Image 1: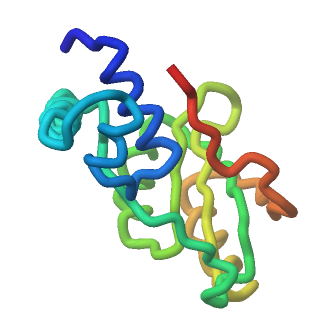
Image 2: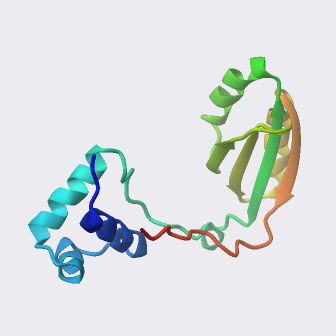
Length: 145
C-alpha cells in the first residue's frame, strides 16, 4: 500500500485519540468523514492498523503486582513454553528477544502467591529472573509521521 501525507495524518490523529470520529479527523486534515473511513479501512486491510483497544489501569482492578519475568529457554523448550503461556491469565505482553533471556513477559497479578505459582510453572522450562515494575515513565508514546 502506498501511503500519502493524509494516511500519515490519519495515523497521527488515531494515535492521539483512537475514539475520534471520522468527521473530527476529517475536519483536522481536510477530508470528508467517508473519505477518512475509507482510508482507515484500507489501513486496516493492509495490516498497518492492527486494531483499537481500551487502555486499562489494572491497579484500579486489584492487580497490585506489575512484573516482568525474563525466561531463559533451550531451543527445544520454546514450543511447549509458548503453549503453556496461552493458559496463563495476567500476561499482557510477551516479547521474544535475542540475548541470554529469550522471552520477557509483562504480567499483572493480584497476589504474591500467583507470582510464586507462575515462577514454579516457568521453572519447568528454564531459568527465570523477576523484576517488579516500580513505575512506567513512558507507557505509550506514539511515533508521529
